Structure formats: structure tokens, C-alpha cells
Image 1 (cartoon, rainbow, N blue to C red):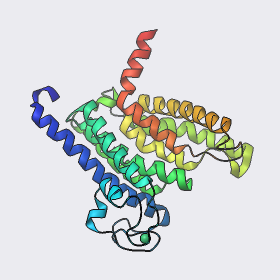
Image 2: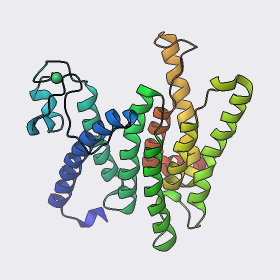
Image 3: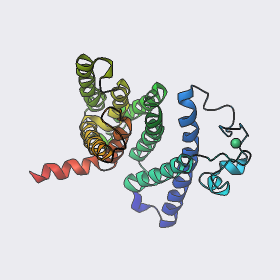
Image 4: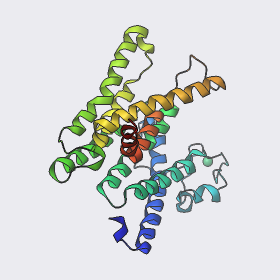
Length: 273
Ligand SMILES: [Zn+2]
């Protein structure tokens, strides 16, 4: 499909999606800061967390606003977290990568939505060790739209199946496994059980977007990536054995990789035998 579009038009779409992604990232920064504080993500307009000085329009230009201010508040000179431009750039790049992979398709629209919800999940879980229900429910709403698209209009290619129940199985596959692990952890260790319920919940919308095969692959990758990173953090003594490492960011990285390349990885793996 993508080949039928002129190269100028394709370039336009790439630039448009990258810039839109940067702006969406700017909004995600507001979500990351305010959702854990249970503040409205719409009102009031953004200000310096330190001196409450309102941001001017030019300060709010993604990435460039940070550079123009040299990473400091105009008023009180308090440093602005590098997280702001990082989240903006990350969102822009992710939007571009999804389009480069799937072109102008329902798959692109679906993954842009899912990944946009998963970015604040990552940063909130890193900082506060929670996965807010509002973000899980937002993901779920988008997942239901994809499910309806699949059963009413056209098979959704990420599911790699025409069966109507593939995304329903997806909802309960990885989250079911994690729930069992969470219950066992709770029985053995009490309240210090290693697995949080947030991680269980997070896989419910992911399952609707990816179907059961890719969702299980995402669970497998998240455990692999989580294990490797945890070992590295322990070796370099960035974390000790008692400190909890949030699992949400690993689920997000694994889901992003799986959504983009999961079916290729599965085909390659199955052909290997
Ligand atoms: Zn300030």
C-alpha cells in the first residue's frame, strides 16, 4: 500500500507524524507529572514545579523549548528535568518507527495508540512503582476498538488469526500467568510478593492489541529483558538485592518490540525447526 503513495507525500507523512509525536510527548510529560498526584491533566496550564511561574508558549515547543531555556526555569533558574525533552523525542521517534514498519494501516493507528499510553506507564512506574488504572483503562478502550475492527471489518494482522476470540485469549494469557505468579508470591512472601497487580492489569489491554501469541511472546521478552537488566544493576551495585525494580518498563519495551517485529520473530523461530 505504501508504495502507491508518491515519495513527497510519504516524506510529508513522516515529518508530520514525527512532529505530532513530539507534541504528544509534551502532553505525556504533563500526564507523567500529574497523574500520580491525582491532578487534572487538562487544567491549569503548565508551570514550573518549583516557583509556579507559568510557561510561555515558546517554552512549550517540544525539545526546542528546553534548549532555549538551557534546561532551567526562566524565573527561578531551577533545573528542568532532562526527562521532558527525552519523553518528547522518544514519542516522536516511536511514532516514526511505527509508521515506517506498517505504513498507513489500522496496525499503525493501533500501535501509535498503545505505545502512546505505554510511555507514561514506563516513567510513572519507574518513579512511583505504580501503574495507574486510568492508563490501563485508556489502553483497554483503544483495545476494544481494535477488537471490534477485527470482528466486524477485517482481520487485524497482528493477531495472525481470523478467529474472533484471539484478542480475548490475549487479554487473559499473559495477565493470567502473572496473576498466578502474583498469588504464589503472595502466599510465600506475604505482602512483599515480587509481582505487582499493576503488571497483571497492564497485560489486559496489551492482549487485546497483540492477540494471545504475541502477548505471550511479549511476556517472555519482558522476563528476559528484566532478568538481564536486573543482573546488570546488581553487578554494578546500582540496586541491591532488597530493592524492588519495577517490572512495568520491561513489559513496555518487550511490547513495543513484539508489536513491531513479533510475527517476524515467530516465523523465523518456527522455520528454524
Ligand atoms: Zn521556576
